[in-house]
Image 1 (cartoon, one colour):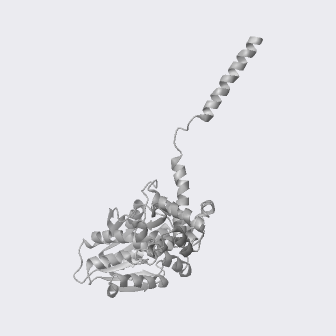
Image 2 (image 1 turned 90 degrees about the vertical axis):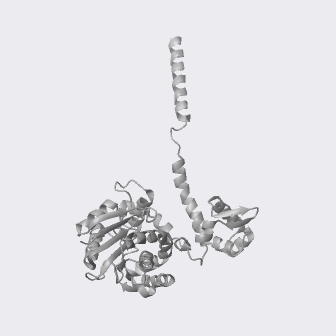
Image 3 (image 1 turned 180 degrees about the vertical axis):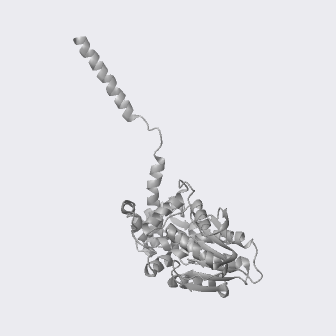
Length: 361
């Protein structure tokens, strides 16, 4: 009996040791991706608060010490010191002893009043509020805030968002213009329609590339077109523009009028039936041989990557009744269904923004 008890005790010791080893062994993969993703929320918030407190604008104006910046921002020195150091770690500021300076990217895009200022969308907390309701939106399939339901809802949102879209889309718009104008310009100039134009950055690039005989009809909500006029004036192409106010889902587009129709960063707001209806109306508005050009954030056809468009799809869940980020295959199928032919896809009109072109035969 004594021998059996000793054997049982040895067995329990071995089992206990094995359990301890199992619990203390290193995991087989690193949690770094989880930690980075979770931490990115804090980094984004640090940048937003830096914009909201005018940190970059104050430094550009010559306040470079903690006490000076805190005074200008009407904030505590303790809090400002911590915020500044975090912004240094994120490479938006540099630090030499106790003074701070802007990095080139902050100087270009984060100083209020400069031509390419991107801070408008971060100056309020509406986006943070929306993402805070993501779980409810996923559970119900219903948006938190419809930004496209009526002109009254859409115009304030897009007037805040358009300056950022102008900056991030300008390089891609100029690349798209090279593709589209490269097909040649009629002797009497191109007749161009831009739907949901916003800043009209995409058609502005066409007007500049194709020359003064090009005429553009820029369509959007009336309150948005007030801002559009500022951008076409800034580029010196206002004499080439006509303006078509109204809801792009309903406004008449005419028949056989245009050589080129541009729908850039807009179709994601629509459900598939509404997108096809719009493509059908554009088809009617184009001359024979006219082209439709669609540029938008698009995931791959399997909807597995890249992350930008797939995260953007969730933004559409939060802010629209039926919007989504659609794939190149979906756009191709819809365009062909209303009669467009010779569909071509050109990548790299911006990050995850290809250009899809179809022809009216």
